Image (cartoon, rainbow over all chains, first blue to last red; front, side):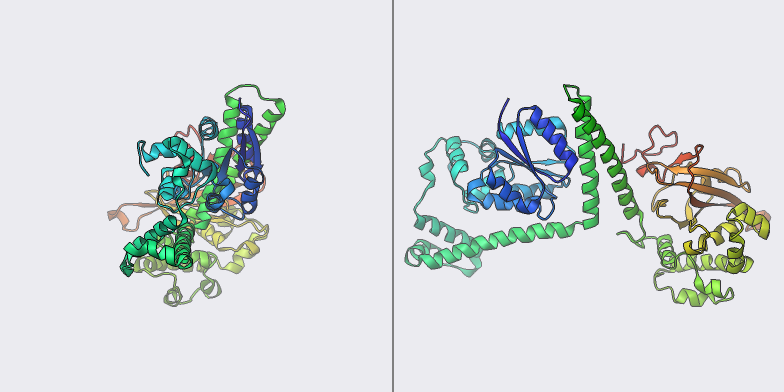
Length: 122
Length: 415
């Protein structure tokens, strides 16, 4: 069991509930945030061990958040698992160029997300 | 960077992507803190090794800028001298180079957004998000383990909500893809005719006002009909429309509608063939109907190819490919000259049922010497009171969620 923190930045309430349940059951502490424009502030306010970041968020895209995060000294090395409904090669390449740690397309399996979180922050 | 380990392996050890590591190596990303320590640890070197004098670093940045704009032939061998003598100018060049890289990324991100159809992108996002939530919640429930009753109830509720959302999102998407105003507009002559008729509200006002109006004049004003093939089928459509108006003028039809909307009854009252009544009812605007309940109309030839397509908002018609074989339209082909009435429910839609009447007519355009031709018509209208004995049908196999359908030709995208 771990006591590490994951910050889930996602705006779909039912996806939030499912991921929160899966990770909490595995011992992770899960905080959530839904607004793209204040996501970076939320990360900086309490630096998590891992950020799970959706691409399509209200007010600011996950790509923009990732880009800013990697330019911000105090949080630039936080691992980021990016979730997206758009899994084209160029989406993945863009995310990788911006510094994503892992890129995962929706729909994903519960086992897949759990093992990736363990791999990145376990 | 000296490598005893591969770049990909180093990136994995540091929980970053290989491309991001590549950017760090080429001084396009600055690092510090934990990541620097991780990289040093992974390479088994002293972190101080990464620290260089500001001057050398600046000179290296100038070298990178020179490589990006090599056509300006900068004096590369004097980069360190420039950094030493004019550090402010050197920093300016470096800052401009960094800003250029950032702007390139912004342009790339914006360009990426623009290359996607925003509506399509949003619809697909809705569909995939719903599927993701359903998949996760159902796996939690299905895989056992201890779940508190409160959570269990919550996931059941979430699955229900998301399946409803999925249905709505899919319907919207299908309607968009099949709509005549969609991206594939006007690719076939029939599409051009349908788009033109949709713009007219499926009525030809000139003929309603004056049945003897010149068809050529109407066609000349139809700018939407750009191809000769589309104008040709439009001319046939107008000739039939003109005949219909002469047989049953609008004033007579509207007057009769206050008594009954039943097509069979109207056909008997006016002593006209059912297809004429169907076609005339399909031209009546929603506002002129007693209950504001409009009629849709579809026709096909003996091969099942649709030749008339007037959809309703909840009853879309496939743009390409074949329709559901359970439509009464096709059933009527098996029993020409016999009207078929059936209440149908569209698969995946619980919002409305439809009362359909289908009728197939047989004709002999070439007399005794030629083959007979078949044409079937189906008039449909939403019914307010759902019928328990309704028949479940789809639009087409591709977008039909009905499982175990004996008439399925191809897998559904929902399978």
